[in-house]
Image (spheres, each protein chain N blue to C red):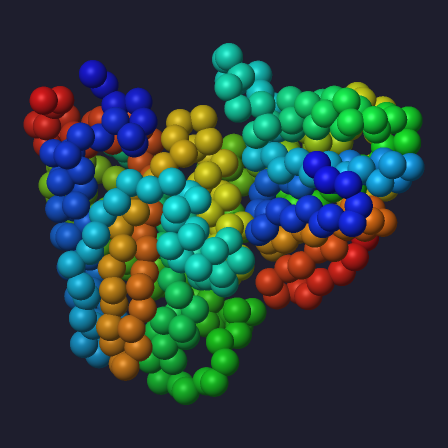
Length: 208
Length: 148
């Protein structure tokens, strides 16, 4: 049976995604630590298939303020990646990157924005490279777009785009620690469903 | 749907559009929250409340079955933002705008006038629809709040 929906993923296929999540998160932690010149500890990530409702509840409800970074990828596979960073962690990263100690995080500041965009770039590349190197695929990544707003409004973007395919998303969650700040970050992997099938086929994982 | 003095709420509208229909004579209000412009791509339509073209007539019919009169019903709409500036994907980047257009069309087709319109731009909105007086209060994360 071909994959039609994220729900169709079986345990073994989920394990593959978990492993990709692991490798990607490891890459991301190294890249971040290098960029921030500070050690970043990262917990073993969890990978879950969740619906939007549950995602929002687990993050404090639809009106929670969040930093959302959205990238799209194309090439051998197509889809989107979305990062959801807690505001405090975003603030810490900006301060560390800029060598500043601003009290408040100003979402309108263009320098902060471009710094965060760069962080998104590096993190997304870490995950995409994990997939590309495991599958030998060519994947191009777009420049990230950022929005700092209510969680529900930000999540509506992938929810609408994939409304006819799935009510669920693949969510990688990890705990990042650095500079006395700890934050739980979420990465939503949103490959088109036929791309997900391609990944599984490339890895030789057919249905069992 | 609700009668006065209730308040209907929809949280954190992004590219979605919230549609408030109100019959002031019987103080009956209905709120619909749509995700996509049209249902024709889905066959059969299993989730009509998601689409502008199917959700609005359904809401109107339900209000009429509760005694509302179409001649008195007016609409207030909000949402349809573009949350991310420049997404490479064209179908994604203007979905908010397409939602707003579809909502306007659906309302025009039913002969319901839009008396307040707070749509577009680039921020999320939470919508409180007060069925006592038909006012729509919008709360945003960074731009404050206002009432229409």
